[in-house]
Amino acid sequence: MKNNVDFTKKYIQYNKLDVKKYLEDLKLVGSLSGLFSDSDIPLLHYRVTENLYCADFDAENLARADVSADAKLKSHGIGIKTFTEGNKKTLQKIAEFNSQQILYSDLKGIEKIKKIAELRNKRLEFTKNAYGLNDLIYHCIVRNRNGFFLYEEKMNSINIDKIKFISESQHTYTFKDDKEEYKFDVSKSTLYKRFITETYFAYIKVDILTDPIEALRKISISNEDVIIDFSESVVIPLYSYKNGEKVIFPKSGLNQWNAGGRARDYDEVYIPFNSVLREMYEGFFPPRDTPFDVILPNGQKMSMKLCQENCKALMSNPNKALGKWLLRDVLKIPYGKIISYNDLLEIGIDSVSFKKEGDKYYLDFKNLGEFEKFINKEYLNDIEDKI
Image (cartoon, rainbow, N blue to C red; front, side, top):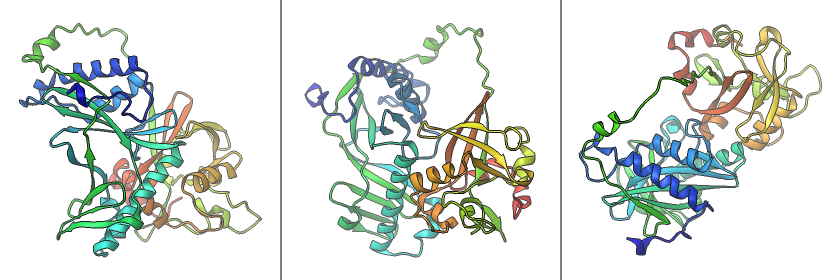
């Protein structure tokens, strides 16, 4: 196997000592595979790989941010995947489009695939814009009976102009562009990509413990130094409701710049903070017109405050800073375009979360439907038309 290992075959310039520690940590976790499986191929849960990668390479964990990268290492976005080696030409899931079916369900053949490719590309571009990334990389932990093998490749957008069908059936489309091979499963609304893993840049042998329970019993766990997480969070939709439909009103919220009454800057926007959330999370934000700092996904800081009657709006200070970042830098909305809910649907993001740790606030993006999951369903009917 050493003949198939070349440390230069990687996209991230890692420190070799960091890679060594990372492999040792992976080996430790893999040795406990007998807790979960009878297979002779060591297991790795995807959350474990995300946490180990971030801890050992001092990367920022983005795994719960609902974007195309699981971690941010300097200016790189890292998509972390673990899978069995198979024939070294395995198809792996890279994206789901359940929440966007309305955009492509009526399309057929090549038009359906082009739409899926477009949605995929928009999501990749959104991730780079939101987190200030220069590129996106797949970091793969490939598993076989000998242990864990590390492999990396670029996370490419799909070249829509070069798409060619390989095969087509009622429920699946297999296609390629000028770089990659893909499969779209219509019934699962899932896109797969073929990973060719012929050469690895590092590996470690894993011995699965025959009695992992006994090994764990030998670990001394102290109940001293217990850390209590006092963080709170709230998910806030970037849209409102009207007649049961999700809408962005043409003269408020993300379109506040289009409201009358006075001259307004094209970047003048606010995030609607509806009355139900205000009641449920009273005191989460400082009082009206009191500035507070928010850490954005790209690490930059923005001053924000609750504004307008009944604190119904989350604005930046100055007001145009939020629109400049959200509309222009992240969503790439042209000046003067009235935003509709469809613009959010195309990207696959329609809400933001605010996490509060002490007096610090952190903003991140949430997938389609995450607000409905967050709030008690009994309150949904109360939200319509309430600002």
